[in-house]
Amino acid sequence: MTKKCFILFSTLVFAVTMASIPSAVTAASTKPVKLKMAHGWSTKHHIHAHLDQWTKDVEKATDGRVKIQIFPGGALSTAKQLYDTAKLGVVDMVWFIQGYTPGKFPLTSVIELPFMTTSAAQGSLALWDLYETSPEMQAEYKGVKILSLWTVDAGQLMTTRKVVRNVEDIKGLKLRIGSDTLKPTAEALGSVPILMGIGELFDAMQKGVVDGTLLGTSAIRTFKLADIMSGLTIGNFFVNAQAMGINERSWGKISPEDQKIIQDLSGSRLAKTMADSYDKEAEVGLEDAKAAKVEIVPMPDPEMAKWKKAVSGIYQDWIADMKSKGLPGQEFYDKTNELIKKYE
View 1: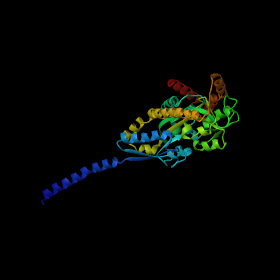
View 2: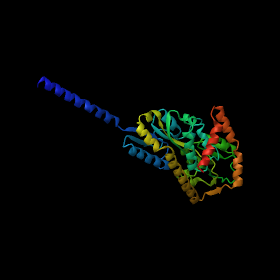
View 3: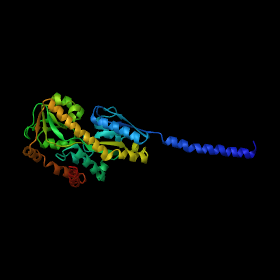
């Protein structure tokens, strides 16, 4: 081989080698981002089905660049530790309940004050709007990128041995609550609140550890409560907040293009899906209660006025508590009420 031919050959080999490098980089860059999502509930829970569909939608919309595997039933974390598990990066993503970690989400708790909203649909859209427009509320979730927030259906009063027909009947009853925010409401009504995860509720009601619970009827079928209830008092007393979030470092592994795709599949769109599911499941639970011959007590307006009067001081107490923490409680309370009216 002449010197000239050798130079030409070497140049060609170099060109081919260099041309292959971008391909290698491109191949490496298209390696799927694999994420683990944890939650504390059964695969039979209606929200699990929606999360499962959401993960499939994400994988399809990103052409397989983002793959999410769900670990349900507390496999990776207890329900009470889910948020911290995501914040620390033990898992990538979680569906969690803010009320299980008292004090961490003070501004978010505004939606859980008594009689704020009457349905999951109304509460969820208002809550997401509040989050999107409130840097102070976003700051509560530092370390976790919130993809969506929603509320459950309106909470009712379920009792085992005593049917509650008026505000006097509730006095002295031991009631399971699922959020620390609900504690002042339960106490103002004269009951004894016991903060407890919902997984413990059936046994606690059956064994008489508690006399009942303040809870949405969407939980009746999922947790098989109809057979151990004697009364269901309908008052739309409150809602609880829930959320789905991802560890910020895990979020950073996803390309900006795919982040946008995921956000478009989340936010208010996912909040509405979850809310509609809760409101639909609430009707199912109510039908189960009727079928089990549970005595259902609707709350007439004059009696409802007594319940609302009993808890009337809670709003100013909440506002004062926020102020003591340097947070805009009055502003948030007023803004939340405006947003709730928007979705009436």
